[in-house]
Length: 309
Picture 1 (cartoon, rainbow, N blue to C red):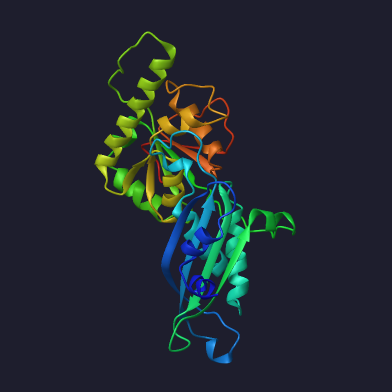
Picture 2 (cartoon, helix red, strand yellow):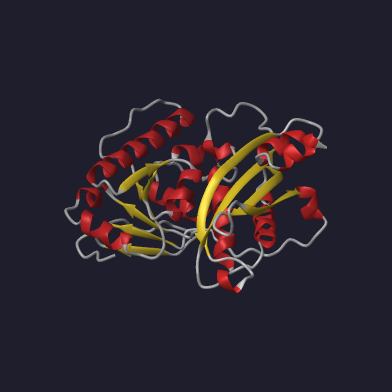
C-alpha cells in the first residue's frame, strides 16, 4: 500500500514505468510546463487567469532501425505542447479532468503514440498544487467516437525567388510585406548561376543539384537575417507556427517523400510547385519566373520590376 501511495504522487514517468505493459516502449516527457489560463468552475476563477502546470509522459512505439539523428522520425516535443495549446484555445473549460482528457486524446492521434499520462495542477488555488492525473491509451480511443478537432495545419504562402530577385535591392521591402501577411511564408530558390559539377550518373546528379539549390538557399539567408534555411518537416511546422520566414532546403524532404516529385532539381519552379502541394500551401508566388506547366496549388506571377507582392 505504501508503495502505491508513493507512486500516486510521483512524476508520471515513474507511474508509467511501474505500470508498463508487456513489450518495450520508449517514452518522451514534458515536465513543469506552466501556462497562465482562465479555467475553473467557481465564480472566483472567472475573468482572471491562474497558473496551470502540465506534466505529460507519452509512451511511443520503438523506432525500427537506426534513428540516424533524424527529427522527422520521432514524436516531437512540440506535438505535446501544441496539443496543450490547441485545447486551451478551443474553449474555456471548468474542469481539469475535461482538459486532461482532450489533451490525451489529441496526443494519441499521433501515429507513434501508444499511451499517455497527463497530470495537470492548479498552482494558485491553495497552499499546494491541486490537480488531476489521467492515463489513456490508443485502445481507449478505439472504444469511443473520436472527437473532431479543428484543422490547425498552417497553409503557407510559398514564394519562388529567381537569382535576379535574390540580388534585387527590393528584397528587404518584399520581405517586409511578406512578414506582414497573416499566413506563414516559405521561400524557394533555384539553382545558382554557377554550373553544378557533372557526375555522369542520374541519381548522383540529382543529389548534387539538390545540394546546389541548398547552397543558393544559404546565399539568400546571407542577404537577410530573417531568412532561415530549413530542411525537415518538423522544423518547417515549427517555423510556420512561430512566424519565421523559412527558406526551403529540398534534399531531405524530396528524398524522403513516398510520393516524391517526378521532376528533378533542374526544373526548380516545378519542384517548388510540387513542394507547395506537398505541404498544402495556399498558393505559390513566382517573382521573375514563368509558371510551371501544372501545379497542385494556385500560381501567381509577379514581374521583378513591378512586384508589389
